Length: 216
Image 1 (cartoon, rainbow, N blue to C red):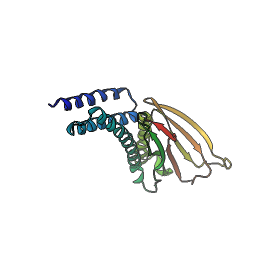
Image 2 (image 1 turned 135 degrees about the horizontal axis):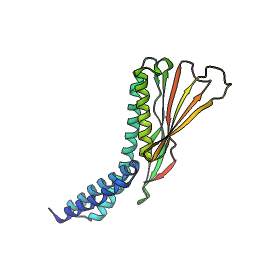
Image 3 (image 1 turned 135 degrees about the vertical axis):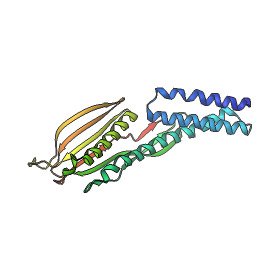
Image 4 (image 1 turned 60 degrees about the vertical axis):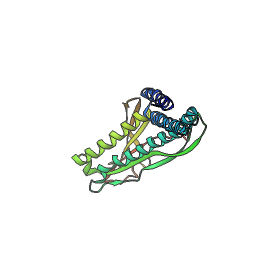
């Protein structure tokens, strides 16, 4: 093997093992950076340019691409999490809501605007909540909340809202709140009685808090 290409392989190999100690969100950017480095360095080697410079340039682009890919996967998973609920008669699935986050590459100070998951909600008819289909739909949403909390290493909110049987006034009332550990993150479930809700549905909403600016 050409010595320059062998050096490229060694550079890429040293970048990937460190990902084992990272959270999944950062790992996506790091793997992208490793791939970008290898790609940039190979191009540099083939064209007889500086391999180190090619690696650095590729890593900058690859790191951002890796981060964006992780966010795209999160959005796709949110959509998949609602598919079971969408098949339930009378259920209503709201479109996935997103935030735009400014992402800065710490090494290059390059900035990109990245669309990322914010929330998704599902209305399930009360009569369907305890049916096999209703339970399966809720289980899919629970699974997505846990996965997102674990990957982000943050708190993910999951709210269960229903209309109270008796009037509680105009304001919603928190009935119960629980906290479940998911990896290094947590899922916070809040059960509320909300007089503004239709009387025949339970609304389940998954929501995260995104920062306006982050660094990768």
